[in-house]
Structure formats: C-alpha cells, structure tokens
Image (tube, rainbow, N blue to C red; front, side):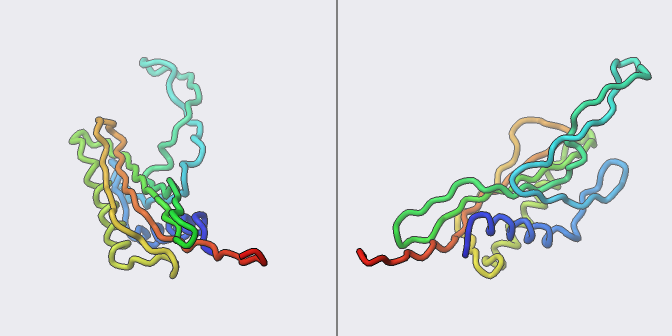
Amino acid sequence: MQTDVHLQRSLVEAVKEELKNYTSVNNDGEHLHFNVYPQNLPAKTARAVPLSEKGSTQAKAAKSDDNHFPYVLVCLDEEEISGENDHCAVAVYFLVGIIDRNTNNQGHFDVAEVLNRLVMRFLKNRIVAGRYRINFPVTKIFQREDTWPKFLGGMSTVWTVEAPELEETEYD
C-alpha cells in the first residue's frame, strides 16, 4: 500500500543516498556530512554559554540546534485527492540549512548546490522506491532576509501516490 508516510520515508532515504558523498566545509576546515530528518529537526540540545560579555567563568545552559547543521528536512505539506478514481497528489518540501560563519556571507552557494543535486536526482530518475513519481512544477526558493551565519533554502515538489482501491459492496 502506498501512503504519504511511506513516500516521506522513501524520500529521506533517497536524499541520504544522494548526499552520502557530499560534504559542507565548516570554518575550521572540517568536512561535515548532511543530516537528513523527516518533518522536523530533533529537539535542541543544551550548550554552555557565558553569562556576560566579560567572559565570566560561570555559564548557563542555552538551547541550540547548531549540532543539527548541515541538514535537509523532508516535510509532508499537503495531500489532495481530486476524485474518486484519481491518484493522490502529495506535496513535499525540502528545507536545507547550513551554518557558514565566513564573513563573505556566501553560504547560499552550498544551499543552492544541495538543492541542485536533489533536483537533478529526482528529474533524472523520476520514480522513487519503485512507486512514487515526481510531478511538475518543482520550485526552489532561497531566504530573503540576512540570517548569517545560518543559510536556508527550500524546494517544493508534488508526488503521485496511488489512491487506495475502492472496495465494492453489494450496493455498488
């Protein structure tokens, strides 16, 4: 049986496979692999931060999601069944987030590269998990505000998921 949940899980695996050899380089020169999550980032974790600007030795815990970067979220959006005999159209969006502390403020290039890789993957081979087909349009969008050092971008897609078969009754 095909469902939106199975589609989402299949897309998470497809994104992991596509990005398994792709890394983002942080400011320390470390190569970071992308985390891929369904729907939401995991809960923020506590990290120590100074209490004052003067470098106080005391610290308090602050919640941060920085350890989830770089990431791709695969998110279910809307699902539409237009008619009794029609397949389902499932909207799925992909959200890419990176941290780039370089003061040149050009982290959008890494975001664009990941989105380009995903578009190429899905348009070259339009079937995922042997059953889900991507449809047009595919739309990419990039952040409009300056959120340095975090950079975000996204892609919206629509997938065909077979409608469940109607069970006939004695009244049909």
